[in-house]
Picture 1: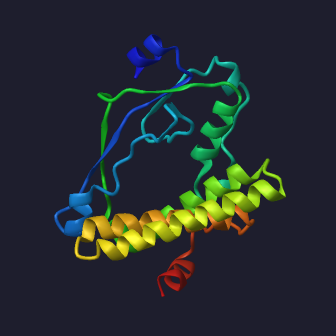
Picture 2: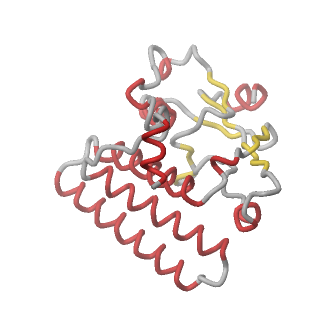
Length: 205
């Protein structure tokens, strides 16, 4: 991470996070490696990041005074918002492919329902971020685009129904785009963390 930061002069450097699955994790989940984390490139740039494997150059102007949002403590997405703001303020993100960390996936996260909720929340956060400065017409266009992407993903899930890995990957991506629509129209983000046992039981039901 340090070597990449020095070579690239980047504000932040991300490394890959490799998921390690328990033996009782679903076969499709292990084969598809659904929990590993890599950055997303958009037109050759990394525009947001994550905090599970990152180095920050805190002297950069784009990070001066920047804080994680406490309001997202129960929903998640504070890292996405943090890096999105950093990049919009002129910060740059680089990637160090060899600087990986391994992370064991706990049983509580080794299920489709957890992945479904997480992908939906990813989408909600993204929708809120792109909708912040979007006017009415642009927002409507973004809703239409995300809806079309969701429909495409669900269609691909039907076409690949015999392959659990490809089917579930398409379904989860479609759910993420539904989350984008939800965020764009202002629906409150779902709570993922800090729930009481009673609230957790209700959600599970």
